Image (cartoon, rainbow, N blue to C red; front, top):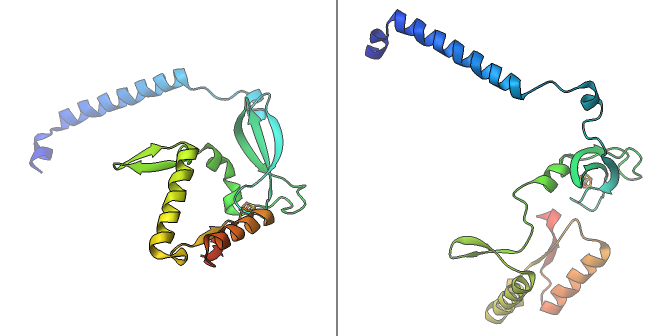
Length: 180
Ligand code: SF4
């Protein structure tokens, strides 16, 4: 309150004019950088792009997606109306498939926490570490201490191999990820 009282009408008007001037200056600065899109840009925002038919990678339904690609960058997506399974439909996962692909937090290579810090591993090293740990767990606690989970994205053949791998490891603990 004390501060408000000492803040006179004159100072308030001065500050208000200053704020208006600053806003006007920033708007002018923005206008010199931003401009409205031209009619051509609205009609065709990605010149030279190609439409590529692909499928959603989230689950084995494999709904159709049309990917618009410009200079090897995926810029827009649409549903594939002529797809024989999805007939132009998507679930919410497929609808933002493009954002998964462009996401900056995607896991693109094996990573392990070393001294509290995420560190990149090469594939051979990652495979050796995982195999050593699996064998170590089996020796110490038995094969049933491990569970294998399949994936909604596996083909029949991949599911068959995962099942065989679990049997080779010595356990019946195998399930499908969509059921948990
Ligand atoms: S859009 Fe949904 S249902 Fe279709 S493949 Fe992707 S995740 Fe599966």
